[in-house]
Length: 189
Length: 144
Image 1 (spheres, rainbow over the protein chains, first blue to last red):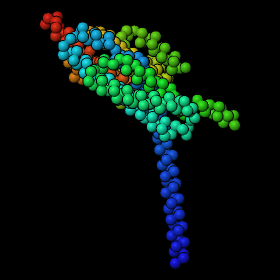
Image 2: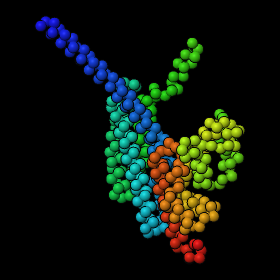
Image 3: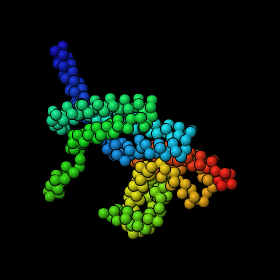
Image 4: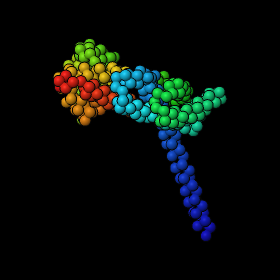
């Protein structure tokens, strides 16, 4: 009887350590996933969604003026619908990528970088403002069209760029350049 | 460094002869194998290597795509009209084919940002509609 209790105890101990190890493993994998997701979000924002030229062109009033003068009527409607689709897609994607960066900062960022309290507060404020502005912009574009709020578009792009700048610092440890001296040292060996 | 030299060589010898970004985009897209996504240019490959030539062509393709994405709509309409004329295709035939087949969709470089591609496709759609409206407003003998 005592032996049975002993083996049951050992079995339970082994099972719980297995459970603990499995949980630990999945957390590490989860962290890597958050890092990859954050890096991808940052790239998508910096290279795809926020370049000034692209944003300026999507919401360019000169295109609207051109179509209004060159092809009024149904063609103008077509133009507005097309631009509305692209503008909504832009706002939605900015919002998605910003949410992804926010998840990274709320969860994993503190393990990899040390941001000052001031930067953390600034970041929290930017994230909140951005997500609210994106929602408002989405509604506005949907109701009043893509040319209704040019200043709001500008503010969204500027604040998102600032968030990217801070996130870039948090993810700087992933940059291969940092491993340069280490690589040189290993070559020297 | 080699890629940069190959790019300069390509720009100097070939792309400088093609005036409009739209024509350049179509030319560069035609250098790409549809099955592998690899670019081929015998002349460039013989001066450099296959890999360097491929990289240089891909770089130029991305650059010209970006140029078109940020072009004003008016400019795109003009380029499309000029391209149509250079193909010696009748306007009705050209516009019908481009509207139905949307050939510009296969002219996009690999790993292009989806939003930029979506934006350019949308601009092509509008540009084609503008050209069609222009054509419809012309007298029958002029539009033929």
